[in-house]
Length: 445
Image (cartoon, rainbow, N blue to C red):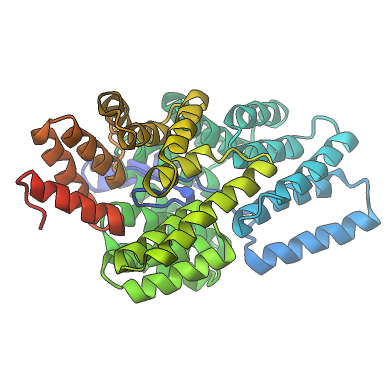
């Protein structure tokens, strides 16, 4: 069946539905976007590596190693191996694998200077390390060699989004859709639109991508993106349905397990949510699920276990820094809520100087707030909500800051909006939002 571009698909659906609207998000991205007051945004969805996940990916890496022992000058296999290491690092939560990726990609480029797949691999490594300027530079270099490189087109969108260059990201998504329509591009196309508040378009694009997905890895990836989008909008039944579809395609897919656990927690299924998040952090101890698990324990009245999870965020951050990953955005909110508030502000300011996105604006605003600098904090909280991105945690943060500066009417509006959008956005944050709203005379039911 011939592929149809996202824009064509959206146009057809829009006409059929008499001009309805749309959006996206990934996460990690889709594979790993989190929610909750202390969970930073994912960098964007990591594209599946030719549909490989879990054990298939591990077997693929071993097959590449075997081939390269026999054919050490196979520059194509070196580039593929480097990119596979990036995917392994992401799925395992092991940043040490980025060094192996560097070595494999360097070897590919030694054998074939200017090889576009290796340059695209370098872009992926840079993005994984949160070096988004480097990611953009390498992606552009790859596209100069091969304008149709799917990985480079996708990583360029990621980099522009994470640098806060949303207009350029939208244009890059349009260009990628024209050149290489497919799952990696569709999910990013959707996220760019979700960032502008167009969740309906994001959902339509992701549904179209799911219709065209055949490999189990692609099905899991896109279905999870739909689940995460539904969760962020407080549509927990839909989130569970999509996550269930993802897990039927790949029962080991951690972002789907995390999304399902969050949806279960929001519906009051604390025991199932705890079990699910424990499984996730046992295999991938990243800040988002660690904080989510800690907050579930905290809300359940088990502060000792909650503190254990928060301490592991610091362990992960140290490991990340040792392997060239910048963890400041990942840790700023966790520190603000559960750790060293001064360190939270340092990290958030440093990240703001590197990239000015809605997520860094939110993190900096919240860090300023917990350090008692509310007038300054409000400027960033307003900036975080300015694009229309529908994220309950942003609205909660803004409402708490507005209450702190004495603007009670605005605070009631922001807190009400957060709870209406996603009443279970965080076990702790949602509880605090309701308490604050009641203190302001609002309806916290």
